[in-house]
Image 1 (cartoon, rainbow, N blue to C red):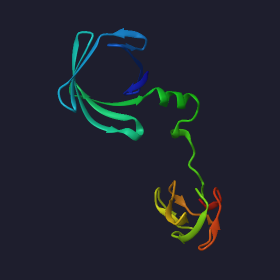
Image 2: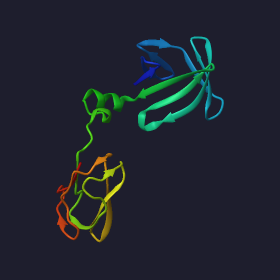
Image 3: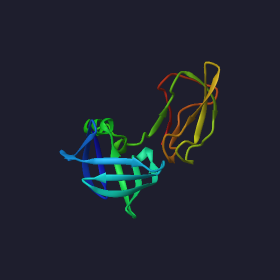
Image 4: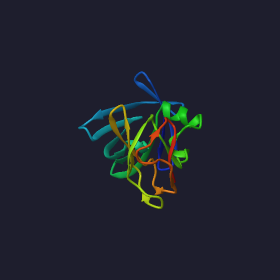
Length: 164
């Protein structure tokens, strides 16, 4: 089952063999690929020319041109719908205001300072664990409010290292 939103209008789509249920109603639907970005869709004896313009997988969004009209389409699969129902979808989760050690190890280098503005993915420090150097990156953009790790010191798993 999928939840599809097209220009703010929501649809429930479920495939049953060769048939589709759209909002609980059986729909005659045929999809033929012309190439990897263009399709011909026949729904209830009406033909539509569909072209995939862009897709943003991390946001579950695609942009289509249907009969020369551009539309934004949001798609949620069964797993995304279940996570949303359980209140576990990532879009509502607050950003972490701290960084903890993912494993025990030794702090080799601290690459930021208190008061410094950082961006998502920016290296914060280097943690040596099991003779491997692990770059600990920022999970969010923000300002470093405190650094609780010290170069050369050992840390335990889940020990607080940096706060925003």
